[in-house]
Length: 145
Image (cartoon, rainbow, N blue to C red):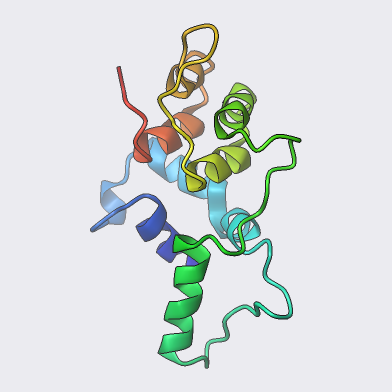
């Protein structure tokens, strides 16, 4: 359930038919998977922030989902030694690290900033043929030039 909620919030999809997904989108969804997304968005869930149970009331579920996706209350922190979003983004796209790219997007990194070589993240993923990473950036607002 949470993965489909993730799709709605994360990719800003208003309506979705599985037969309309492109091959790169399907590859991306398979690679990300529910486990990876939950490991990022529920990293800080513990005793005081218990996960949802199927029997929880709708109001509890809605509050939890808002905290998880809108407030990013449980989001995994960066472990790179810096919180600079764009630096983390460039390091991640250079090695096709989807986990860190997702974190950068969730934390509102500028996807269109250019590095010292004059390339943006999308251009790097295209040059390196990182299809899923490229698709993730496009679906989240990276400008195609």
